[in-house]
Amino acid sequence: MNEKVPDNKGHFGIYGGRFVPETLMPALIELEAAYRKYIKDTTFLEELRSLQKDFIGRPTPLYFAKNLTEKLGGAKIYLKREDLCHTGAHKINNALAQALLAKRMGKSRIIAETGAGQHGVATATGAALAGLECEIYMGSEDIRRQSLNVFRMRLLGARVSEVNVGSRTLKDAINEALRDWTTNVGHTHYVLGTAFGPHPYPVMVRNFQSVIGNEARKQILQVEKKLPDCLIACVGGGSNSIGLFFAFLKDNIRMIGVEAGGHGIASGEHAARFAGGSIGVFQGCKSYLLQDDDGNVLGTHSVSAGLDYASVGPEHSFLRDLKRIEYTYATDEEALKAFELLSRTEGIIPALESAHAVAEAAKTAPALPKDSVIIVNLSGRGDKDVQEVARIKGIEL
Image (cartoon, one colour):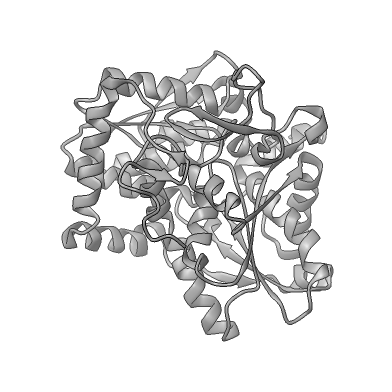
């Protein structure tokens, strides 16, 4: 791996960069300087580590899914239990760190976008802990399918602003958050929730999430006395996946990122950027994007609100070009089956996002020897998705 990636302007090869209005450049430069300062600051790092342990609940367990392993009849499957983090997903790792950073930057207000709602809940949690005002932008379609998380955000003191334009999902929520930030850069910090957007967000979010892979590496060596043969994680913007993968990039380990296949690639109703997209510039950076021949952003679809996004983090595009990471997709139907499979075999209800990774594990594990080891990043728990799954299956609650 090239140690100079990204470069000092945030480029991962041809990807990444900083494509924003001039009004946001001072805020991004200020953020980059603060991040570079505090990531080396002993007091900041000690506070973050203390909160990771006592507030988030780290390290999260690496759980051997014995029943699932036996049912699939192949490789051993371990689950990195990010669903056991405080607030129920990996999102808190990044949101809390950015809230602490914003407070040190002298900001009084933080804003965020959210699709599945977990990043919104995590940001509202960080704001409450740090004593900051908080506003969350969320598409009306996502508000409908994630009503429980909307209530949680409001309970934590955040204002939830409905975005009722465009596809009314994550893409449009990000647009509104960026407009807000442009207007209020003086006292507001934008807590972007994934490894995407203008520099320094992709590298900053990846580094805040890399605690996942750092822990998993130590844990698997302790229990199996060897590194895993395969890592699997779902990919929306890409923070939970790069958070797991990053610690293993220098090792000869197979890594699989799973996008949202929706109703299938041929249907056009999906969010599989690598299967159906092309290179373009979107919401602050250059990466793979679902767009038409004229560069217009296409609509997306996924049963999981958190994977329902038109682009993907630039580091993922870079690593795909290097053939360091494989990217595939799981359809809605496959994800729903995996949602039930893990629930019934292990007593663990996964987030629909994470169920895409479980679906890929169900395909991959049977083809591997029984002494092989797979780690699946269980990025979040499924409480938030139970009502939506029931609606899809026609069950009244």
